[in-house]
Image: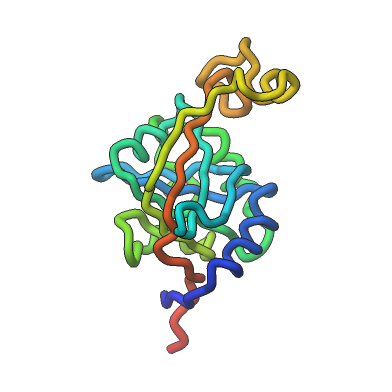
Length: 183
């Protein structure tokens, strides 16, 4: 695979279009690797640096990995995301299942971070966390708290539950599209 570099603007445009459909956030700590579906995220500039802001609930396995290793990749498909990948990576826990193997996804070594890109979701941003903050749902409008943080949904529920999110600001160190070698 080769990496065709893309600009922050190109990555941001693709992310804005693709995030509502579901993209992958991949994290690694030691020999543990996990990809989870995210539908929320922001690309921008903070503190004079290009960043991707990712939101991960406190009860998620990915949060544990991010807190151990402050690097991650954001992985976007070139077309509609595979429904099976979205269902497994968005509905199962990496604590219990090797989601990449279950989905037939292929990690490709990161270029500037220890976390891989995902061949089948080839548009990639490599990020290093520069700031994190636990969100305070009580500061949100009540209708958002009711919708996204329902008190009766346990932490293990894969959709909206009562766990707040941690916002991770990852400096985008590299952005590219994985492409097959033309041999």
